[in-house]
Length: 364
Ligand code: KG4
Ligand code: ZN
Image 1: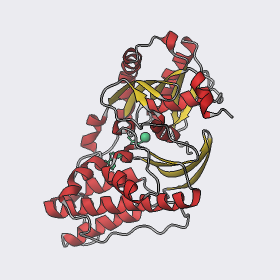
Image 2: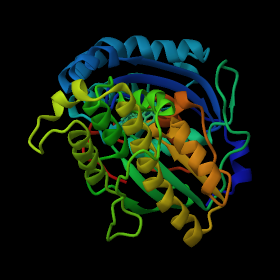
Image 3: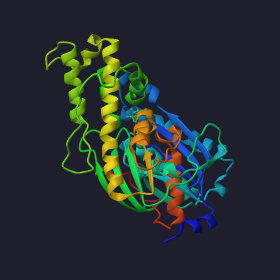
């Protein structure tokens, strides 16, 4: 095992490529600590009208963006391919057509530029964004120090809600996860129900301060697994609440409810749902802190940028969580490159650029 102090002698620059959903992203990271560039192009504007990501549109958009984004990441980092020590690419989990574009680009570059290739699990990578502590790029608020092991990691995104205990790099145990919807997905669905635009998390976060977060009673799921989550019951409870508030029957279509809800009712639903959804996560995080006594607590994924989550964690956790910049919470290449750096530093297995396949259903 490498001691933390040994890393400082190892110089490694990795380019990370991320195309698992609707962001085409590439970034260069040095030594797993320093962000040199972070290029992101998103096809989000093309999905908004459909209320969610359309896989076919996302995949086509990656094809257009991938080369310019990689070039931008190198240029911003003032690097040429000669300076790059390896390529890290997300190979799962994610949308098949989207993953394929990034993986094929990375495989081709690994072969033609003669660079080691590291296959990255997107969910693990979300947590590694919190290891970045330095950058000369403007507009980033990074943690002052890297997290310490043992640590607890919480991944809260549109596709994942997981609580993980890390003894060390590459030595982790999945404590629990959602048994149905991911928390971000629940935000997206509740937002749609009350007529707010996609992505639902930021929309609900913007409306919630105008409402009363104690206006209604909403349930928190009781799970068999101590650290498991569930959000589908909460989502259904919001639907039933909206039907009751507007005087409609249980078979009234959810797509028509937003027209009947008043602005005040929408704000109260947003505020109460947001508080309960976040409490559901934070309750489990507290239990895990009591049992595992971590030295650090880190959060990754799009929902990690939620101010409500940060407020509740900071108020209720027995240790101060490590938060990274919101730009590094949503999908990005920097988190992929950072995990790639640690794989290179810790001499983890490389991927075969001639045969690396995508793994859309990859889990932790
Ligand atoms: O990590 P991410 O960019 O993509 C996935 O890997 O899923 O996360 C996107 C998710 C969306 O569901 C979005 O609604 C949610 O993150 N999100 C938030 C906030 N910002 C983004 N959820 C709650 N509060 C926020 N402030
Ligand atoms: Zn993600």
